Image (cartoon, rainbow, N blue to C red):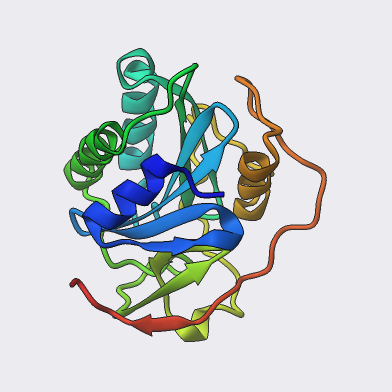
Length: 202
């Protein structure tokens, strides 16, 4: 069930809701985000396809160095998606607090020159968007049956799960099977799902 906080955020940002995944998704500062409910946290997903290795390392270092200030539980990379888990205690994060984090993260994505319209599979410019593993991203329809070009493997990975897939990250969120350490669930990776739609920035 989508929480009151996420429902409010979706309404404020004119985002879509995906009841099956307890998630909301939409554009924020040009980037495509998906926010999901977890047990004691909110999970924020964004595609990092098209980013350079150096800038990805810099982004990971920024997240690691600001974990306390941003109140993060942890973060992981898989299938060209960054998953950041926002820690919650007895009080859930408000829509305004989640939006504040989106503003911080999108600002850093821009600073580290992450393209806003890179296909989540091949990394090339895409004029269409859709859901991949249930995550909102720029996406070429013809790429859905192709092998993913891996932009998330770096020699200095921080808190990344090289063997996890985006589908497994979603499972960790929805099933609540995640702790403060990197977690890999033994399961089949989720298939690429959902169609694409024409690019719209409205």
